Image 1 (tube, helix red, strand yellow):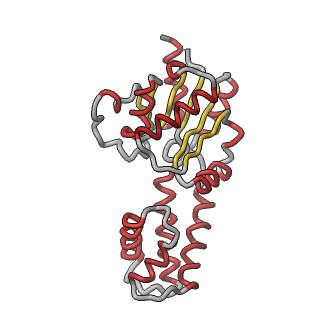
Image 2 (cartoon, one colour):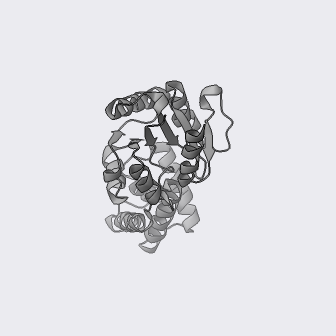
Image 3 (cartoon, helix red, strand yellow):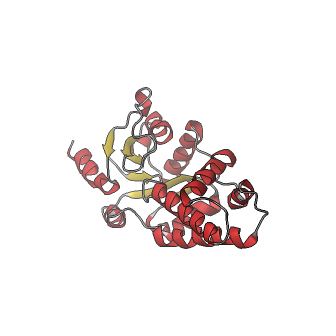
Amino acid sequence: MIKAVLFDLDNTLFDTYSLVRKTRWQACMEMINAGLPAASTKEAYSRLDEIIKKRGSNFGRHFNQLCKSYGVKDDPMIVAAGIAAYHNMKVGLMHLFPGVGSMLVRLVKDGYLLGLVTNGVALKQWDKIHRLKLRDFFDTIIVSGKRYTKSSKVKLLKKALKELGVKPKEAIYVGDVLETDMESANRLGMVSVQVTKRSSSVENEPKGKYQTPDYKIDETPHLIGIIDKIKGK
């Protein structure tokens, strides 16, 4: 019997992938308008992408490095233009996937315990949680400042299950990445559900039985149908 449903955050409850791409593009556009000597927004975006890959997404001076790559001194006007554009665009685009809010309401009404398990810089993740107005839906929220690994995700899920007071077999875990989300849930004996809409591993083949999800859905709200199917068994 399923008693609890646990969720990943990014690309599971909201579209992180599109948010990141659009906010960075807008930042590059406004930096050019402020004087960054890039030939095009596409060129600046490509350079910014390389800087982020090299430095990591949590490095705090991406726009400064972008200026440097064009031979521009740390120009606060240009950097601030990028920062302002990034955050203004983020506020406008940060919404739950369609139907996720009503899905969470139904799960709560149906008596399921809900958990949210997410990795990333704690301040950034909590900012997302508050902006998306998610906090009050969940009985436990686990935010780890570390990068996802198989072992760390298992530990986080164990902690969430303990706080909810349920056994792994009594819980569903909904995420998008085969290598961490699905493998960790399967190793614990949870019911694993992969959301493929924005999954970074949607085109990858599972490597071994632990990466194979019990169910796949292309939209997170389709989880309700999976739960109904499990209840009918």
